[in-house]
Length: 90
Figure 1 (cartoon, rainbow, N blue to C red):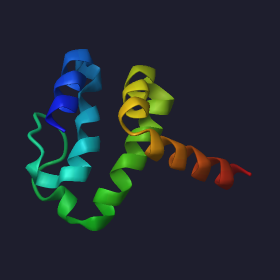
Figure 2 (cartoon, one colour):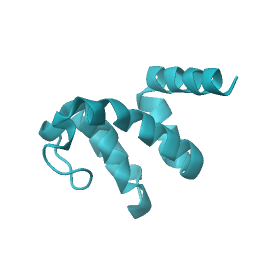
Figure 3 (cartoon, rainbow, N blue to C red):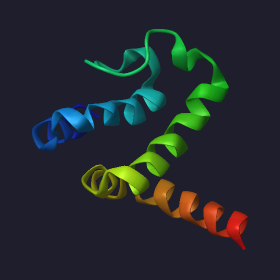
């Protein structure tokens, strides 16, 4: 996870900083972040479950470079998310 964070930090710009909340949702308060939700936010299971989907949707709609990173590091999550969206829209 540390290697992924370093790569993301090297490639990001200031408008992409909120991308850190995706791994933070997985690791909770143990994730060494510089931005994102405050301590304890992800102790609520609903927040932890919703965050990846919120980040994928946000990246798809507003930040193609961030979406590329999410696809690269979390391909199964992206596939599941896209399948869910297609089913809702069908």
